[in-house]
Image (cartoon, rainbow over all chains, first blue to last red; front, side):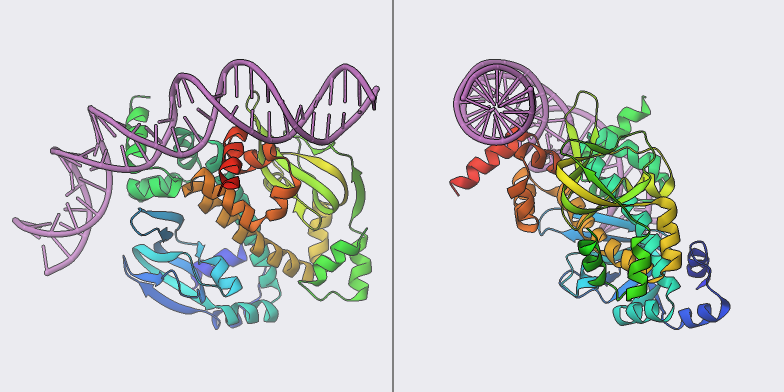
Length: 192
Length: 192
DNA sequence: TCAAATACTTGATCTCGGTCAAGTATTTTA
DNA sequence: TAAAATACTTGACCGAGATCAAGTATTTGA
């Protein structure tokens, strides 16, 4: 259960055995079945979730409009409504499982306590967020200026597994495109 | 020169007098005149820049197409090509000054050394990046799903000073819109 | 294993916002 | 302070991608 989390952390910072034992006490395991919700918009997001297995998505649901996907979280990823979690505001995002998932949850208070008790975890999250910023920045640049085809190709390039493992309807939503457009792009790519 | 940086850091972490003195040794002041470049695409981005005064922009320049603005950095903000800085890859972004600016630069090596010598700086950057992620996430959601009008109104709401202080041509580029569209939106808003 | 739900495709049509063009207004700098 | 550069506005037109509609294909779970 903790193996993947610990491996993930050790790739970034060098925690000792004592710290690892302490670390575990801050997390609560949770199973989440396909389609089950971890968070609903309007709630305060009380946990950061680390995905040990399965796939989750975070998304907004504008009444009649299709849901709009914000993030897919695979094994080894973190997911939350970050604004809600950090600023204790109402969540704009929903989070639910696309495939049965196993999670490790840490509450806001424990997140604060963890970084104070194990300062290296500040470093871990600093590096994690650093990488995350790079990815978000790229997504933002592509979202702002690219054609539908370029958006799709960029995803195929940077996240081939997303395109493989996740229904195209959701891929479309993630890219801010309609499912029809993605379908037409895929057809075009088949014939080069 | 260092006042704003130190104030900024102290809002997030509690550095002692000794650490502050040490901290200063890692930074190099630099003046950058309007239109001067701090970074050109293709170079490796060797510095994080803290803006003590003035305004900078980071942007891509797709040959014939208009430049596309990625970020405006005001007094108290950080700016860089983060991917280039962290992963030592060629920069996709240019960075230049919109108004005469005073900067504090820290090199990649010193950034690494700083966080090792003053672990609280890991915490400072962790919190900084946390907030930055929230902003980027919001920008990404808006960029993916909103109309031109919604994009403009969201900027007016979240960054009124940007709209006030920065030419509308650049605002348009920042929002991924054409200057003409922004002009038409502003006209529409005048008549409610 | 089969009905129901979900996912995908394809065509027809529409619309928002981009592009082009030609002007005016403002700022900058020599 | 005047010429040059930059910024902004407005109109006409166009096209990429959304929407609507009506199918087919695949997956899921009782």
